[in-house]
Image 1 (cartoon, rainbow, N blue to C red):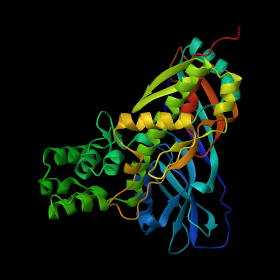
Image 2: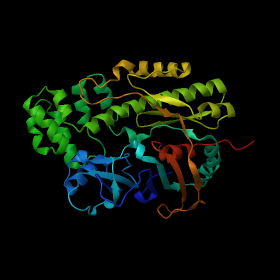
Image 3: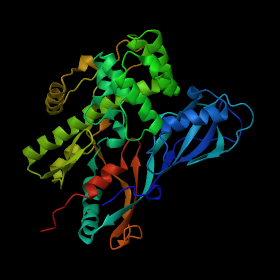
Length: 396
């Protein structure tokens, strides 16, 4: 099975709670449609095109680079009438005005339209059989791989190193190449890692935040804290939150395994880029009731857990990671906090529908399957797809 075989196969439309006005206000709001763009990179470009600072743009959430996505972006301090911006793989069209910047509270959820491809007959049947189970049971509310782009395969989390005060190590991870980097960026990162301490040699290759970091290191080669502070604050918050999200995933997977042992239901393990998901194959009634409506910690220094089972699982995860709750504080990074929050353990897709399997025009001899559903904000459609792909027992 292939997901996101092309951008057309993964469409996301933000379901906004923002009420737009036709009358000019402090924030001009644009409808942003994009594909093959990282949200941070595109906002940098859009700020330059509109003649405002990067911090003058706000969005309610980050959208997947590997799809066609639609969302709102609010722009403060725009001079003149809002104008349409269209360039390769994105468009920003004026949509109205609002009095406040956008935040996570500006969206109720997202509507997804997907096409799964390169399926054989048994795979397609398995997905269709699993639809009824997912409608009834829902699925674990894991963060998926898209959340962990700041983690480098086999190298670790930049956010973890920041929490533990290992600033040089954090910078090395920042300059570790990602598979999404273009050739010039990869060359620059290779230069930095091969010439640590001789930063001036790599500065001509750097742009944007990379250049700002290297400029500080050229002036003071061991000033790692000052170099980190040259980064966009939102990026620092993002990498810290990514590590907290990983800890949440580990707690949720551990709780699923614990409940499976105590209540006697079957699970499937599925590896992903930084860990392993545990999915129930089918939930008995009491387990379904236990998970539905349950909140789990996305751990921070101020997290307090009252549930003994969750506390035991969390303690085991932190011990395995070699970190404690008091460490989850962004020390020496001013104006940055990483509070603990809670997140629903389970999600229930709304209006989950599938078409009939059809001949796949991209993969001759194979089948495709169209899916559509809505999810609350912060939930990942790809987790739903992962669950649908698992084998489900046939009714006895």
